[in-house]
Image (cartoon, one colour):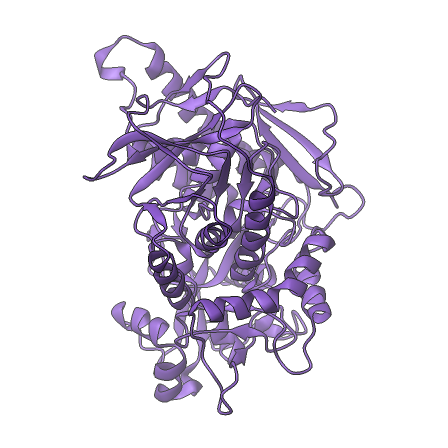
Length: 569
């Protein structure tokens, strides 16, 4: 793997830090990897885009799924995960998750995380969509992510682990043989390191979270701009299953024009008995699935969208008035406060809800040790495609995936990492023209209109054409000498917009190619699942000419055998 030679337009690094491993991201995946690497004696540096506790993990409401309850088994957890994944899960990856998961949760507790307990003092377990057992561990009622983040951040600080906050990762450094040699990054604010610099290390772990900000309405925080996937693409890594973006079915509806991060109404609310109803109070999930409101998320999101289309409505309702004030205050205080802050009291009225972009099931393709197709580059958490989620993530498997695969990555790095090599410039470097910051909003609207919950060849083709138009405009600006058309200056907003365009192009190309409906990929012009032609994965690589090479594979064997690639402009 020699990479693409493509880099973001940025100043040359003005400073450098040496390490054995650099971990980009401070959610459950990144901090767990960091703690395990540090315990193994590795010089570890954590780079995070905002503050240590400001990633997606802290927003997780539901919990962690693990077979910890009486009568539950990893095999039952595996079965539920495979069903939700709609035929595209890698069973080896899922088996790894569910068998190693319970002990990983116990180690998290030993690290300092405090989970809710039942009347006998044992861990309290609840249910969420797609689960046939109560196996969701939660904290603070509906503040599981915040508690996990607190515990891990405190452990990192207690270990005096080196961290670089308010730092946007830019690109991968490689040596003469194409192996990882570190990353470049831009640090925002005053401190020992400021501006563009580098962390030199023979191992890089991407734990940058999701890309939900590619859509107008999302549950993801503003920092989730697909930076890790974009970096990996420019480095030449394979990206898989990016068309499978899960739209969470129950997000607080704030109006048709609402944009940015939207308040999530956790699946656990339905797990405790809330009902989905239309404006007439009809429970429309009954008869659509054996689990009704607790069906896998793709089924519930599609049912809500269909009902909205049938009735010309902008949203449906989640009715949990029967919980009473006591249960709302005890079990779901965060959601209760969020609803009331927007003028809705779920104790006395149904909650207006609609689907919004939530979790990317695909990402940077890895093996069972988190290794990507670029030597020395690892990926973990939502940025990775481990094969666990397939075509649709089972509720609360994400935090577990971060725990389990973080430990595996740390073990692999400790066993294989050597001395850092000298980074070299690509043989034919290509500087990627930057988008103006205002392009971000246009990309989000294009993606929501053409590649949202409901897709078609027409909508995806139009989205692709508009994205290409944005790219061509940026190229033209980079080549002109006209002052009014000069390219965007390097900066966080321009880099983020450019990353969003990169991941949006891959998502649209894959969604257009997959001519079927499967999991959370819903094509209205190909309404059925097609196991004859499409029980396979779409793998995408960025080429040096910035075109996208797409091929299919029937398995996630590593390293992959890459057939003749077709060009997707």
